[in-house]
Amino acid sequence: MRGFFLKEDGNYLDKTNMDSSELSLLARHSGTEIMLQKIKENRTFYIDPSENEDLMEFFYVLSGRVLCEAEVYNKEINVNDYFYIKNLEETIFFKALTDVTLMWISTTPVFHYISTRINELKKLVKEVEKKDRYTLNHSERVQEYSIKIAKKLKLSKDELDNLLISSVLHDVGKIHVSEQILNKNGRLTKEEFNIIKRHPVDGAAMIRETYYKSTSKIIEQHHERLDGSGYPNGLKGDEIVLGAKIIAVSDSFDAMTEDRSYRKAIPIIEAINEIEGLSGIYYEPEVVKALIEVLKEEGKI
Ligand SMILES: [Fe+2]
Ligand SMILES: [Fe+2]
Image (cartoon, helix red, strand yellow):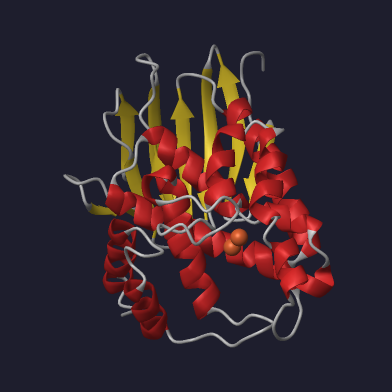
Protein backbone atom coordinates (compact mmCIF):
# COMPACT_ATOMS: atom_id res chain seq x y z
CA MET A 1 0.00 0.00 0.00
CA ARG A 2 1.32 3.44 -0.88
CA GLY A 3 2.60 5.37 2.10
CA PHE A 4 2.87 2.34 4.35
CA PHE A 5 6.26 0.92 5.28
CA LEU A 6 6.66 -2.34 7.13
CA LYS A 7 10.11 -3.60 8.00
CA GLU A 8 10.78 -6.86 9.72
CA ASP A 9 13.05 -7.51 12.66
CA GLY A 10 16.69 -6.95 11.78
CA ASN A 11 15.91 -4.64 8.87
CA TYR A 12 17.62 -1.26 8.91
CA LEU A 13 18.79 1.49 6.55
CA ASP A 14 22.29 1.59 7.90
CA LYS A 15 24.25 0.32 10.84
CA THR A 16 27.45 1.09 12.67
CA ASN A 17 29.07 -0.65 15.60
CA MET A 18 31.94 -0.54 18.03
CA ASP A 19 32.49 -3.56 20.22
CA SER A 20 30.56 -2.13 23.16
CA SER A 21 27.65 -0.62 21.26
CA GLU A 22 25.68 -0.88 18.06
CA LEU A 23 23.61 1.79 16.35
CA SER A 24 21.06 1.06 13.60
CA LEU A 25 19.25 3.69 11.58
CA LEU A 26 15.69 2.45 11.15
CA ALA A 27 14.02 5.37 9.38
CA ARG A 28 14.53 9.02 8.53
CA HIS A 29 12.27 11.76 7.28
CA SER A 30 12.70 15.55 6.95
CA GLY A 31 15.63 15.64 9.28
CA THR A 32 14.20 13.34 11.93
CA GLU A 33 15.99 10.06 12.50
CA ILE A 34 14.80 6.99 14.34
CA MET A 35 17.56 4.73 15.60
CA LEU A 36 18.05 1.67 17.73
CA GLN A 37 21.01 1.66 20.05
CA LYS A 38 22.39 -1.41 21.82
CA ILE A 39 24.88 -0.94 24.62
CA LYS A 40 26.76 -3.68 26.46
CA GLU A 41 26.48 -4.24 30.20
CA ASN A 42 28.78 -2.13 32.41
CA ARG A 43 29.57 0.52 29.81
CA THR A 44 29.56 4.14 30.87
CA PHE A 45 28.20 6.51 28.23
CA TYR A 46 27.11 10.12 28.17
CA ILE A 47 24.95 12.65 26.38
CA ASP A 48 26.39 16.06 25.63
CA PRO A 49 24.68 19.43 25.45
CA SER A 50 24.23 20.58 21.84
CA GLU A 51 24.55 24.07 20.39
CA ASN A 52 21.49 23.39 18.25
CA GLU A 53 18.51 24.88 20.10
CA ASP A 54 15.97 23.09 17.90
CA LEU A 55 17.36 19.65 18.61
CA MET A 56 15.32 17.23 20.66
CA GLU A 57 16.61 13.76 21.37
CA PHE A 58 14.20 11.19 22.69
CA PHE A 59 15.19 7.84 24.24
CA TYR A 60 12.91 4.94 25.11
CA VAL A 61 14.19 1.89 27.00
CA LEU A 62 13.15 -1.24 25.09
CA SER A 63 15.17 -3.69 27.15
CA GLY A 64 17.63 -3.68 30.03
CA ARG A 65 18.34 -1.26 32.85
CA VAL A 66 20.33 1.97 32.86
CA LEU A 67 21.59 4.04 35.75
CA CYS A 68 21.17 7.75 35.08
CA GLU A 69 23.92 9.58 36.94
CA ALA A 70 22.71 13.16 36.49
CA GLU A 71 23.03 14.94 39.82
CA VAL A 72 19.33 15.60 40.45
CA TYR A 73 18.02 12.48 38.77
CA ASN A 74 20.39 9.82 40.03
CA LYS A 75 18.15 6.85 39.47
CA GLU A 76 17.58 3.64 37.58
CA ILE A 77 15.77 3.74 34.25
CA ASN A 78 13.89 0.57 33.31
CA VAL A 79 12.00 -0.96 30.41
CA ASN A 80 9.25 1.36 29.08
CA ASP A 81 10.77 4.40 30.82
CA TYR A 82 11.84 7.18 28.51
CA PHE A 83 13.61 10.51 28.64
CA TYR A 84 14.29 13.30 26.21
CA ILE A 85 16.74 16.08 25.91
CA LYS A 86 16.23 19.64 24.75
CA ASN A 87 18.60 22.54 25.44
CA LEU A 88 20.56 20.36 27.83
CA GLU A 89 22.80 22.36 30.17
CA GLU A 90 25.33 19.80 31.35
CA THR A 91 26.68 16.45 30.21
CA ILE A 92 24.71 13.53 31.67
CA PHE A 93 26.39 10.20 32.41
CA PHE A 94 24.71 6.83 32.21
CA LYS A 95 25.81 3.34 33.11
CA ALA A 96 24.38 0.24 31.46
CA LEU A 97 23.48 -2.06 34.38
CA THR A 98 22.63 -4.85 31.93
CA ASP A 99 22.78 -5.12 28.13
CA VAL A 100 20.49 -2.30 27.03
CA THR A 101 18.44 -1.51 23.92
CA LEU A 102 17.25 2.07 23.45
CA MET A 103 14.99 3.57 20.80
CA TRP A 104 16.57 6.92 19.92
CA ILE A 105 14.71 9.60 17.98
CA SER A 106 16.58 12.72 16.98
CA THR A 107 14.98 15.74 15.34
CA THR A 108 18.22 16.54 13.47
CA PRO A 109 20.29 13.98 11.55
CA VAL A 110 23.06 12.53 13.71
CA PHE A 111 23.55 9.03 12.32
CA HIS A 112 25.86 9.88 9.44
CA TYR A 113 27.99 12.06 11.68
CA ILE A 114 28.33 9.32 14.29
CA SER A 115 28.96 6.47 11.86
CA THR A 116 31.66 8.39 9.94
CA ARG A 117 33.48 9.11 13.17
CA ILE A 118 33.10 5.56 14.43
CA ASN A 119 34.43 4.12 11.16
CA GLU A 120 37.48 6.31 11.31
CA LEU A 121 38.05 5.40 14.93
CA LYS A 122 37.59 1.70 14.16
CA LYS A 123 40.23 1.85 11.47
CA LEU A 124 42.70 3.24 13.99
CA VAL A 125 41.73 0.78 16.69
CA LYS A 126 42.20 -2.08 14.17
CA GLU A 127 45.77 -0.90 13.62
CA VAL A 128 46.37 -1.32 17.32
CA GLU A 129 44.70 -4.71 17.38
CA LYS A 130 46.75 -6.02 14.45
CA LYS A 131 49.88 -5.48 16.43
CA ASP A 132 49.00 -6.49 19.87
CA ARG A 133 45.82 -7.88 21.36
CA TYR A 134 47.01 -6.82 24.79
CA THR A 135 47.17 -3.18 23.76
CA LEU A 136 43.57 -3.23 22.57
CA ASN A 137 42.15 -4.65 25.80
CA HIS A 138 44.40 -2.33 27.76
CA SER A 139 43.20 0.69 25.78
CA GLU A 140 39.56 -0.15 26.40
CA ARG A 141 40.14 -0.45 30.15
CA VAL A 142 42.10 2.82 30.19
CA GLN A 143 39.18 4.46 28.41
CA GLU A 144 36.70 3.13 30.96
CA TYR A 145 38.76 4.34 33.97
CA SER A 146 39.46 7.68 32.29
CA ILE A 147 35.78 8.40 31.69
CA LYS A 148 34.93 7.51 35.27
CA ILE A 149 37.67 9.82 36.56
CA ALA A 150 36.51 12.57 34.17
CA LYS A 151 33.00 12.30 35.53
CA LYS A 152 34.32 13.16 39.00
CA LEU A 153 36.36 16.08 37.70
CA LYS A 154 33.56 17.72 35.70
CA LEU A 155 35.35 18.18 32.40
CA SER A 156 33.98 20.44 29.68
CA LYS A 157 32.18 18.85 26.71
CA ASP A 158 35.22 19.20 24.43
CA GLU A 159 37.65 17.91 27.05
CA LEU A 160 35.42 14.91 27.62
CA ASP A 161 35.01 14.10 23.92
CA ASN A 162 38.76 14.39 23.40
CA LEU A 163 39.44 12.16 26.38
CA LEU A 164 37.01 9.49 25.17
CA ILE A 165 38.92 9.18 21.89
CA SER A 166 42.49 9.75 23.08
CA SER A 167 42.18 7.21 25.91
CA VAL A 168 41.34 4.39 23.52
CA LEU A 169 44.03 5.52 21.04
CA HIS A 170 46.74 6.58 23.48
CA ASP A 171 49.12 3.77 22.49
CA VAL A 172 48.34 3.75 18.76
CA GLY A 173 51.96 4.84 18.08
CA LYS A 174 53.08 1.40 19.28
CA ILE A 175 52.25 0.00 15.85
CA HIS A 176 55.74 1.20 14.88
CA VAL A 177 57.36 -0.88 17.64
CA SER A 178 58.32 -4.47 16.77
CA GLU A 179 56.41 -7.33 18.35
CA GLN A 180 59.60 -8.76 19.85
CA ILE A 181 60.08 -5.58 21.86
CA LEU A 182 56.39 -5.19 22.78
CA ASN A 183 56.06 -8.75 24.04
CA LYS A 184 59.57 -9.24 25.39
CA ASN A 185 59.90 -11.33 28.53
CA GLY A 186 62.11 -9.56 31.02
CA ARG A 187 63.72 -6.14 31.09
CA LEU A 188 64.15 -4.01 28.01
CA THR A 189 67.59 -2.77 27.00
CA LYS A 190 68.16 0.98 26.89
CA GLU A 191 67.91 0.94 23.07
CA GLU A 192 64.66 -1.01 23.19
CA PHE A 193 63.19 1.37 25.75
CA ASN A 194 64.20 4.30 23.56
CA ILE A 195 62.19 2.77 20.71
CA ILE A 196 59.14 2.34 22.97
CA LYS A 197 59.49 5.93 24.12
CA ARG A 198 58.75 7.16 20.62
CA HIS A 199 55.15 5.94 20.69
CA PRO A 200 53.50 9.10 22.11
CA VAL A 201 55.05 11.27 19.35
CA ASP A 202 54.33 8.70 16.61
CA GLY A 203 50.76 8.27 17.85
CA ALA A 204 50.15 12.02 17.96
CA ALA A 205 51.48 12.35 14.40
CA MET A 206 49.11 9.61 13.19
CA ILE A 207 46.10 11.24 14.85
CA ARG A 208 46.96 14.65 13.42
CA GLU A 209 46.14 13.18 10.00
CA THR A 210 42.58 12.26 11.05
CA TYR A 211 39.36 13.89 12.14
CA TYR A 212 40.52 13.42 15.74
CA LYS A 213 43.48 15.79 15.51
CA SER A 214 42.31 17.77 18.53
CA THR A 215 43.22 14.77 20.71
CA SER A 216 46.85 14.60 19.53
CA LYS A 217 48.19 16.73 22.38
CA ILE A 218 46.76 14.35 24.98
CA ILE A 219 48.28 11.37 23.16
CA GLU A 220 51.66 13.05 22.91
CA GLN A 221 51.68 13.89 26.62
CA HIS A 222 50.35 10.71 28.24
CA HIS A 223 53.80 9.67 29.56
CA GLU A 224 54.73 13.11 30.87
CA ARG A 225 54.98 13.38 34.67
CA LEU A 226 54.31 16.40 36.94
CA ASP A 227 57.94 16.64 38.12
CA GLY A 228 59.30 16.70 34.57
CA SER A 229 60.68 13.15 34.67
CA GLY A 230 58.39 11.85 31.92
CA TYR A 231 58.79 11.66 28.15
CA PRO A 232 58.94 12.74 25.31
CA ASN A 233 59.45 16.38 26.33
CA GLY A 234 59.94 16.37 30.10
CA LEU A 235 56.99 18.74 30.55
CA LYS A 236 56.07 19.82 34.08
CA GLY A 237 52.88 20.59 36.04
CA ASP A 238 50.51 22.81 34.12
CA GLU A 239 52.40 22.35 30.86
CA ILE A 240 50.65 18.97 30.75
CA VAL A 241 46.99 18.98 29.65
CA LEU A 242 44.37 17.54 32.01
CA GLY A 243 43.42 14.71 29.61
CA ALA A 244 47.02 13.48 29.57
CA LYS A 245 47.16 13.63 33.38
CA ILE A 246 44.02 11.50 33.57
CA ILE A 247 45.36 8.91 31.11
CA ALA A 248 48.71 8.86 32.96
CA VAL A 249 46.91 7.67 36.10
CA SER A 250 44.47 5.21 34.49
CA ASP A 251 47.24 3.85 32.23
CA SER A 252 49.66 3.26 35.12
CA PHE A 253 46.92 1.74 37.24
CA ASP A 254 45.92 -0.68 34.49
CA ALA A 255 49.54 -1.59 33.68
CA MET A 256 50.11 -2.48 37.35
CA THR A 257 46.92 -4.48 37.86
CA GLU A 258 47.06 -6.63 34.69
CA ASP A 259 49.62 -9.30 33.79
CA ARG A 260 52.24 -8.18 31.28
CA SER A 261 54.82 -10.23 29.40
CA TYR A 262 57.57 -8.90 31.66
CA ARG A 263 55.84 -9.07 35.05
CA LYS A 264 52.78 -10.27 36.98
CA ALA A 265 49.87 -8.12 38.07
CA ILE A 266 49.94 -6.67 41.60
CA PRO A 267 46.81 -6.40 43.79
CA ILE A 268 44.64 -3.29 43.35
CA ILE A 269 45.38 -1.99 46.83
CA GLU A 270 49.16 -2.17 46.24
CA ALA A 271 48.80 -0.37 42.91
CA ILE A 272 46.76 2.38 44.55
CA ASN A 273 49.31 2.76 47.36
CA GLU A 274 52.05 3.13 44.80
CA ILE A 275 50.12 5.69 42.76
CA GLU A 276 49.10 7.61 45.89
CA GLY A 277 52.75 7.70 46.95
CA LEU A 278 53.57 9.42 43.66
CA SER A 279 50.64 11.83 43.83
CA GLY A 280 51.97 15.37 43.32
CA ILE A 281 55.28 13.93 42.02
CA TYR A 282 54.24 11.99 38.91
CA TYR A 283 50.49 12.22 39.06
CA GLU A 284 47.97 15.05 39.46
CA PRO A 285 46.56 14.79 43.02
CA GLU A 286 42.93 15.50 42.06
CA VAL A 287 43.09 12.76 39.41
CA VAL A 288 44.51 10.25 41.90
CA LYS A 289 41.78 11.21 44.37
CA ALA A 290 39.12 10.70 41.71
CA LEU A 291 40.40 7.21 40.83
CA ILE A 292 40.38 6.23 44.50
CA GLU A 293 36.78 7.45 44.83
CA VAL A 294 35.78 5.43 41.74
CA LEU A 295 37.39 2.24 43.07
CA LYS A 296 35.79 2.74 46.49
CA GLU A 297 32.36 3.22 44.92
CA GLU A 298 32.83 0.02 42.92
CA GLY A 299 33.80 -1.85 46.08
CA LYS A 300 37.25 -2.67 44.70
CA ILE A 301 39.11 -1.11 47.63
FE1 LIG B 1 51.72 4.64 26.35
FE1 LIG C 1 49.04 2.51 27.73
